Length: 123
Image (cartoon, rainbow, N blue to C red; front, side, top):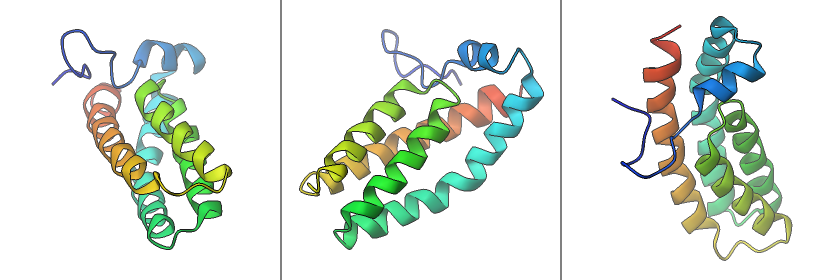
């Protein structure tokens, strides 16, 4: 499995860029990958609850946390969706929160698979 979305799409994550930021240390990147896989399910559950509760402050908080974790892997699409959700929630607008949260969930699932395949298995 490749971390590519399709033949002309950007990769789900950019391992080379992430490794560069980690000083080339694959062990550190793998540890971050394991932490992501451990932490992100609860963050996504908390995000879904915040969306259901129409709690813009918690939507913002959880989207920000997901964005920060995804940034460790240069996961551009995940970060972009999380940032859009974060910014709309920051403005107090939760009208698009459910749609964006669903989109973020899809991106996070792809990122989880890419981390398992390209970061943890190859460390």
